[in-house]
Length: 302
Image (tube, rainbow, N blue to C red; front, side):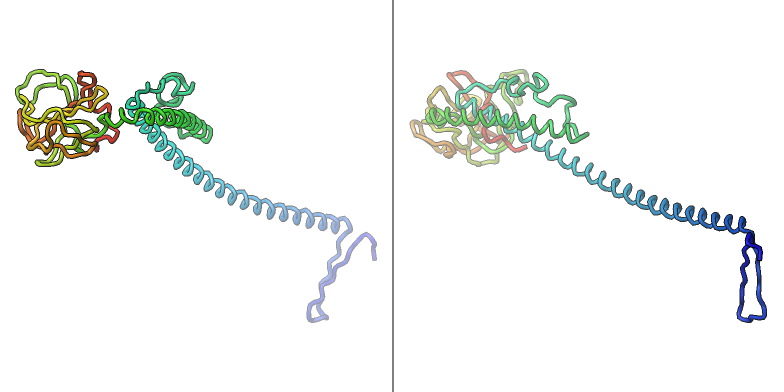
């Protein structure tokens, strides 16, 4: 037999029938190489398909994680915005309390702690930046510095209030009737006669017969009728404070009587010149009428 040839014999079940193929060594080598290459190609294809599937699965996971992170960041942004609103409200209350304690308000530039110069917001847009972790974290740092200043201010205010307890008790710091005021302090159009007038107080609606309370400790200085105001109570609180309560339907105190904050002094009415049931309320400091809302520690309902 030629050593340069390969013979392949196929023997089926019937040994009398056989098939014989003779191949040269060159062809056998080519066939083996071809099978090896085909196997390698198939193996590579399987690996690539498997890796492609893994990449697609990982990409889907990353998309989901990215969406979850965006949702969390948006939620954090909302919480930070709510915190910002609470800090602003706390700042406004702190300013009122400092005024009552006889302290000057916090310097606005100091309050902004050098972030963005004068103003009440963080640098950038007027709204909270929600575009990334860095922006949100920076704004949290900004709010933290504000809170630290407010905490320091609160400490100063507490010391001043403790040192001025009597003055605090004499300061008209609540509303005589719990409701929104319908007419503010200062120039306005007269509701009954028309024309311009200077409103020396505020008007607070109330139900007929609703209690009117003293807004600070003091002594009743006057009870009776006043032109335009009808049945009126005037309380002298000391420390330069005096309050006026007009349009009552009934007076519950007498002249010279000592009253405490929240004591009932009269009932809501519409005596005098009015267009409906309400309390005309004035605050005087050293005989000068001032805006009563400057002293409210319990803001009116919205």
